[in-house]
Amino acid sequence: MSVEKASPYNVDEVRDDFPVLNRTVDGEKLVYLDNAATSQKPQSVIDAVSEFYEEYNANVHRGLHTLSQEASEAYENAHDRVAEFIGADGRENVVFTSNTTEGVNAVAFGWGMHHVDEGDNIVLTQMEHHSSLVPWQQVAQANDAELRFLKVDEGVVEEGEVEEKIDEDTAAVSVVHMSNVFGTVTPVKDIIDRAHEHGARVLVDGAQSVPHMPVDVGEMNADFFVTSGHKMCGPTGSGVLYGKTEAFHETQPYQYGGEMIKLVEYEEATWTDLPWRFEAGTPNIAQGIGLAAAVDYLEDLGMEKIHEHEREVTRHALEMMEDDDEVTVYGPSSDHENRGGVISFNVSDAHAHDTSELLSDEGVATRSGHHCAQPLMREMGVPATTRASFYLYNTYEEAEALVEGIETVKEVFA
Ligand SMILES: Cc1ncc(COP(=O)(O)O)c(C=O)c1O
Image (cartoon, rainbow, N blue to C red):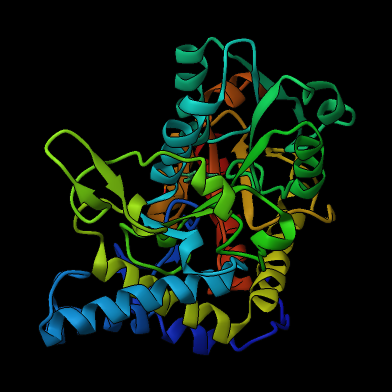
């Protein structure tokens, strides 16, 4: 089955940068296809984190001693590096969080609670991750607002939905950029333009887009944008909340305490400058520095090239799976122009958990379950799917290993 296919970069060399990819699982070569959950880390990121602990570990912003100054400089520069990477104007527009979930909560509780009024509506898609759905439910419940959902068909927002659902009563729109279930990329610009015509603010959940394709939040004109550093080669505990300056000025801090204040009296306090007013307490310093190293790594490789490589490897797997009557693939076909590196599927009558377990026995790491999208699974009429998600280091041979693993599942359930 093996094919000779080109990649825009040398994948074998890239794989050598990721120590964990050399390991075996119960004697089988590891085929890591759970990248939508979290990515593996290159040596340069591991080194950047180790170097921080080995050479200049100190708290940031407050010390006058050398280590604290070095740590502060590296941590602050990391904000600049990320700002440049996502097309933000500057470091004041980039808050480091632990993950996407924290970023959405910051917007929902810091902005949504104060700007969504009774009778307003909040527009989401039917395919939001729980982390971009549940915080908005809280806002809607607390403020007597309505939640509206843009209908999706196979991961694509249906025609006319945006015009129908976003109206003069829309206060906030929160949309996923790339679906973690279908792998589809939503053309968010049209949604943002429509929302802005009605004076609504827009949050884009870029947890699955920034790691895999070039993203420019300025060009997109999003008011808020969130992503997870740990899904883009960065350390766990790293994430990003972007906000336009005027949107951040409308946002209340969502955590209060040290490091985020300017002046404190016994009865009240004022907030320090952006972005630090949104980073209360000691931040994830090593993680932020590691994230900047991840950005360096991704940019060296080239985001266009990464996107192209993943699309082709995914297409290779999809073409084989689409030819198989016993495999149901959810989402558009392999030739869909906006399809990224995620494949949700089920195999004959096998439960998704059994499929994932049998694949694991073959060394193929996938994820099974509702993928933090329970309402969507209900819409799809399935309790769960198995999900294979590809990244910059996955090979055509690994796409074939997935398909071979599926053959084993079919044999077991025949
Ligand atoms: C689309 C999407 N949004 C949000 C999240 C939540 O990310 P995190 O767990 O890093 O907060 C995920 C995680 O899988 C995701 O895929």
